[in-house]
Image (cartoon, rainbow, N blue to C red; front, side, top):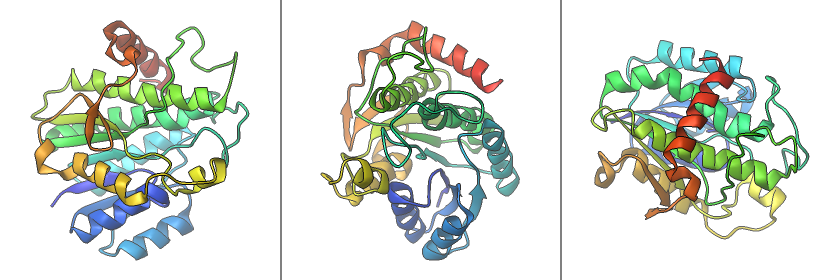
Length: 265
C-alpha cells in the first residue's frame, strides 16, 4: 500500500479520493484549510489519517505544510495536488490577491502546489517510484509573462485557465528534470462539471459524476497500467494534448524561473 498526500481533501473530488483510497488500505495524509471539516473527513474515512491544516493562499503556510508532511512520514509515494479554486463563486469573480500579494487563482491553484512539490521532492525521490498528480483542467489560457498577475483585462475564467495551464507546464518541466524511476509527474482534467460545491454554485449543474473524476485521478495515483508514465496530460483517462504553450520549452523554463522567484526559492 502507498502513502498518499491529498491536498484539498475536505470536499468534492478530494474527499471522494480520500474515501476511495482509504477503503483500499492506503495510508493517507489529508490537507484542508478548515479544522472541523478536516476532522470530519478523517472520521469518515477511518484508519487514522494524518490531518494537515493550511491556507494555500499564504506561502508561509504552504512551506509549513511541507515541513509537517516530512515530520509525519519518512516516505511519500504519491502527492495529489488537488486543492484549488474555480473561475467564480464561491471565491468571487473579481480580481483578488493572496496573502503574498499575488493574483489569487495563480497563487492558490499553481504557486502553492509548485512550492509544496519543490519542498517535498527530496522525500518523493528518496521513496522511489513515487508519483505526482496535478489535478488541472481542459480550461486553459496562455500565460502572459509580461502580466502574470493579470492586472489588465482580468476575468476569473482567464485567471483560472492560466493557473491550470501553469500546473501542466510545470509538470511537463519537472518530468523532464527528474528520472521517471524516481518520480513520475502527470496532469489531468479529471471530469467536466462534477457536482462539487464550486461547480454547483458557479455553473448550477453537473455533466460528469464525481466517480468519473475519482477514478481518473486514482488511476494516475496508484494504477499499475500507468506505472513509469511521466510528462503526460490526460482528459479523464485518455491521453490528451494541452494548450500549445505547454510544449514550448522556452516558456516552461521561463515559468519555472519566475515561479522559483515568486515563492522565494
